[in-house]
Image 1 (cartoon, one colour):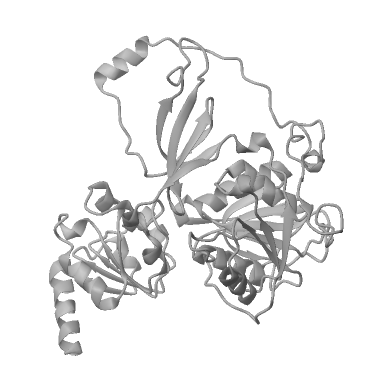
Image 2: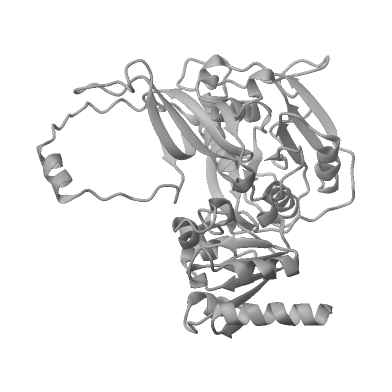
Length: 458
C-alpha cells in the first residue's frame, strides 16, 4: 500500500496490463510527497494507493462520456475471503502459520544478551515509544519534538491495568525514541533535552530508502508489548503507524491532541470537530496532530543508544522509494518554522499582486503562506500552501491578507499564537476568528504598514 500519492503512470511489459475481465497486472510508477522532495515508487499491480488530498483536481465526465459509460461492459468478481481473520495475538508469534506469520518480530539485540530487546520488560505499560523523524540534515523535525513533548507530558498508565490502558497527567514511566537511518550527534543531544531516555537506532542497507512495510516492521520489532507507540501526524507518521497497528493487531487513533482520565481527544473533519475515544488492549497506537503541542525541554539527560542486528524480509521491500527528486522551490521548511507568517489569498487579485505582501514578509523576517486557491490558480508554488492539504504552521503571529477562512485553511493555522486578518469582508470566517482585524483593501493596508515600518526604522 502507498499513501500521499500525487500522480501515477502505467508501465511494464504489458502496458499496465490487464484486458477484458482480468484484474490489472504489470507495473506502475507512483509519485508522492516525501520529506525531502518528490518520491518515486515502482510497484507491481494490483496495488492499493491513497491519493494525496488536494493534489489532483476532479474531472467530471462529459455527456458523451456518460453515454459511453452506460454501454460499458460490467465485470463482476467473487469477493475474496478476509485476509486477516485470526486473533490479534497471533500477530506477535514468530514464524506462525496465521495471516501475520510473515511479519514476526525479527529485531535481535546487538550484544551478548540474546532475544528481542531483553534489556527490559516489554510489557511495561508505562513505556512510550515515539517514532522520531529527521530531516535531510539529520535534525529532529519540529513535529517529532511536539510528539515527544505530548508523550512526556500526557501519557500515564491506568494504575497498572493489564487489559485496558487509559492516559492522564504526567508520566511515571519512560519515553523512548526510535530512529531509522543515520543518527547525528545533534539529534541525540536534542532528544536528550526533550527527555528521551533510550534511542532505538535502526540502520540497515535495505532501510536506506523509505519502504512503509519494511520501516513499520522494524519499528514493530522494537515496540513495547504493552504501552504506547506513537508518531507525529505527518504523512509518513500516519502511514507507518497504520502499518504498525495492523501488524501488531493494536487499536489506533489518529490526530490526537489531548489525553486525560476520559480517554483521548482527537481532531476529525479537518480540525473542525473533536472526538473522544478510548482504546482497549495492551498496546495503543497513536499519531499526534501537528502543532497541538509546543516542544518543551526538560532536564537534559544522556540517552542510552541501542543498535540492532536487523533482518529485513524481501516481501517488505516490494514497494519502496526508487529515487527522490529534490526541488529547491518546494522546500517548505522555512514556512513551518517561521515565527511570523504573512498569508495571501485570492484577495491579492493576480499573480502580480504579491509585491506589498512580500515586502511585509521581508520586514518581519518571516515567511509567505498562501491559500489553496492561490496555488490552484498557479500564482504561487504548492510548497507555500497552508492548510489541511498544505503545511500546518504555528507562528507567533499569522497575518491573513485577503483570505476568507475556508475550513481547510483554518485547519492549517490553528497553531498560530496571534491571528491578524486584513479583509474587505467583515463577515468572513477569518475576520470573525481573528484576534485583530482590519477591514479594508489589503494592498492599501499592507502598503501603509510597510511605509510605517520603513519610517520607524529610519
